[in-house]
Image (cartoon, rainbow, N blue to C red; front, side, top):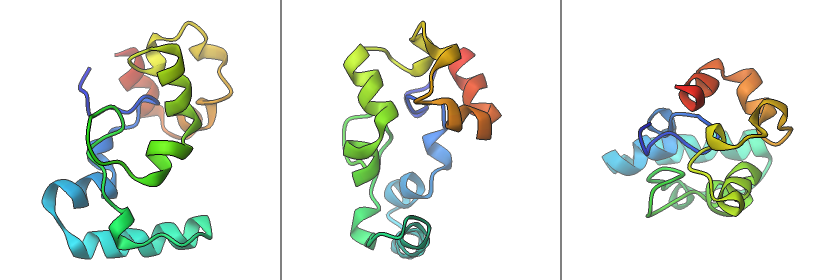
Length: 110
């Protein structure tokens, strides 16, 4: 499994924050900050849009770094991804991600 797959199975390489960071794309940072601010009803600025991947060392968005319950859980359990957790099939923490993103489950089980 690639390191760019998040703990939840989502592909970080498809995330606009990751894409903006690796390409140093200020226009994409601005667009993403505006969209995420609207979706989350929270002030998100372009300088907040920096992430090198959930499981990688380096920059992360505020959400991924300190607010994501899935990441916190995986770090506390010491698993590489949720796919390594014996409670995955009944997990309420990651359930909504897996229900809305079938490829995430494939990434975790693959």
